[in-house]
Image (cartoon, rainbow, N blue to C red; front, side, top):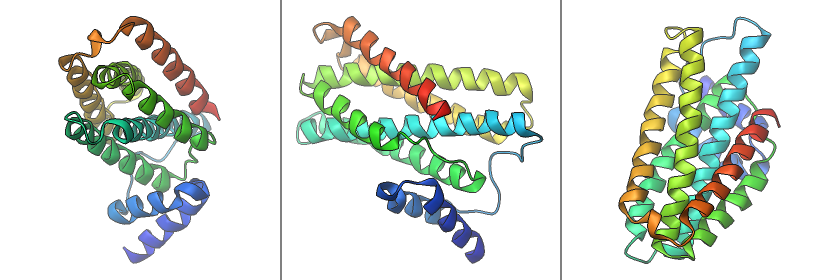
Amino acid sequence: MQRITQRAFSCSRVLCPAPFQQKCRASLQFGARAYSVVPTPRDQEEQEMVHRILRVDHAGEFGANRIYAGQMAVLGRSKTGPLIQQMWDQEKKHLAKFNEILGENRVRPTALLPFWNIAGFVLGASTALLGKEGAMACTVAVEESISEHYNSQIRVLMERDPERYSELLQVIKEFRDDEMDHHDTGLEHNAESVPGFWILKNVIQLGCKAAISISERV
């Protein structure tokens, strides 16, 4: 196990840009193990498909963490702070899991992590400046986009071989359910009451779709 952990640490140095190596090492140390939830690719085509899935999912969870960080910077001391913190804590677990999976499978994260680091925080903070309803509107838009993307991945893996990808499917389904819970929480806390909700939601979701497309490839 010690050797496995050492290899995971070594991999994390390669996979994570310098500003994020400490986070990657911490999550790998906590969750390092001798096998992965991802089966060994049979060919180059399968490897590229799996790497795209893992890369974009990691980027999405990273971005979600930065959004909640931005929201907490503005609303952390308000009555809404504990609710945002609760959702953020779940996103931290999601990110830690994908850090682990990327390390195990030697998948490089998107090269745009430094950009998502800033963009996510700015999005979270700017919508939180609109008040609780603005933060919740952002949550609804982002979590709906992530849930839809997870659903598309589930369909792809189910069509290919549900038994072969059973463990990865379990992870994605669990995280998808968490994202939908966050989406529903946002609606329950008056997300739709923020002025211009539908415009704000559509703009954020357009950004999410662009981020997904780019992060799969870059």
